[in-house]
Image (cartoon, rainbow, N blue to C red; front, side):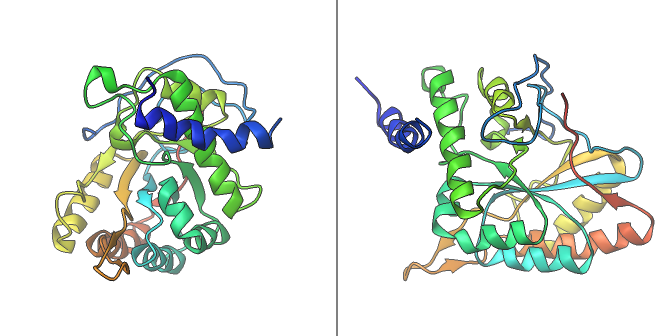
Length: 264
């Protein structure tokens, strides 16, 4: 019998078929063969290696933001990045892409890089072994999420994929690579899901970037929370403030902010 999740994924995949005739401070690295480079990523060739480093080394960091778009916090974050002339990667949660497409367009228009973060933020490895996603389910989810992003931003490049919770499961790195998306891990996190105290987060961000030069940094601009009237509320104000404090300080010392590495 098909599960609710399987039926949902089939519904997500159907338009494509007809239309086309952590948990942990550091994500694990995994090596495998190169993907074809064709398909939803349109980012060129990719491999199934989970990258955790920036495309350059030295006093460099690659900022990445998960679980948006958030219509309150993401625009504030975009303003901070614009003021500091920094580009970042935004790992987009498909359900919020559908609800808040204008924010996705703002991200793309500002020149930031888009990343597939699945449609429903499911644990692809499963909270228990019997819940793990099959290869078919992973592919359907990633294809549907990329297709949705491109409905909002036609022709968008999506060169990275990040598994929710850093829970890759058996299949997602290779499926992502087959679709032209480099699996994106991280070397630095500030655990901004534990607190939104800006002082705490700013201290963590500065100290951990300095301790891990050349690393990918995991931060969050989502998810989205709504009040009783259904209006979106701020959820990551502390993260935004931490970025606003730390980035200009590091830039003044000669640090650079760049994209994550890609393989292939």
